[in-house]
Length: 468
Image 1 (tube, rainbow, N blue to C red):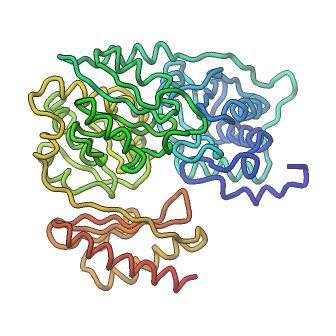
Image 2: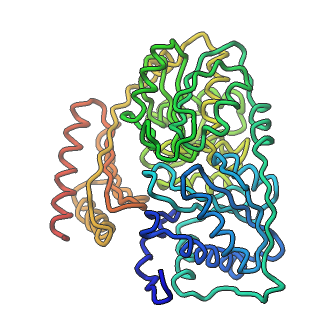
Image 3: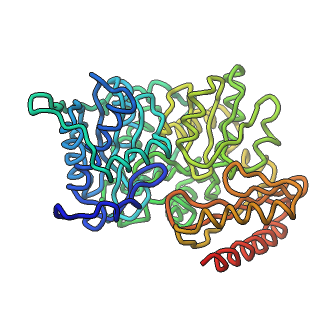
């Protein structure tokens, strides 16, 4: 883009929790240089950064190294020192390096689960807590306004190449152990988890069967989004190998989805519930469970008491922020697959999920599938309805008004939440990252679940049509 660029046209690439766009359409090295200037200016003028450094790393995408160098140049042009990984890292290794090196803030260049032509950046504070929506939008506003910190030539920032990948691998390997040999299938989806996940899981004594564990920036074997469809090869491999479980990572390694020994792809609610049940016995003083409003009510049914389940907004940033505020937090569970384990560190490193699960299963006679089958039935489903970004929040606000007059209880904490009967509920919420609205339904029976889904999908689609 030339000097006449109207940067307001790029406002949309700044999302609630990150920056995202298609390379050479919305995302270019020039744009990332300017984002680096805005990021650094925000830290200096509004967050009090003085002599501390910023840590910058990147995932395995074809364009990530290029964009990371551009972003780092922008940060240094604003007078801030940078520690740079110099090589792609799994998400956890990036955050661990920043945490151990005492960085004031961290930038990780990634587009997470999106297709390979996409890229972006996520911002975090040194503690591991992600930038809030307000923080990200302040960076956006500085980017748009162009009012940057620009010191003289002799005060620009300097770069040191430094990463603690080996220390990260060793740290997690020392935190977990298994009491018997176990066979586990590891599906890295050719993403950043290839760099550390198989070796760490082997280090604790697991027999690792790798699947798509060679880096491929085109994600040629499966989507970088780990879901029931993309993990079908993992499910088949787990059954064929007689493995005790399988784990599938997303593109950058901050989410992990578990497949049980029967080849069933587990919801994050189910995995989190199993982990929390055993962890409560290990750490009886940590009794708070953070769970977003999309997570199943089965958490309360199984864990309360002794645990207290705190419901929070959807978004991994809320997990880390709330865990920091509440020191008695045992685990934080995001319905999308993010989890936090504050006893280890605050950032949502997906590596801990299979490590902890393996440790738990190695001490039990029951298989993972038996543990799953012993839980209350979870009839839960989510659908996505397309809705223009320009009206999606207006749709939610009008539905709040309409449905509040029809139902005795409507929870506005994050969208429109409606409890129905004793154990059924509906949540309608606008996506923070795209032109869509999600409906999540949980019910006592599958028939009731499908009826509620059909009913509220119709209500939502009519409201979208009205406002369009």
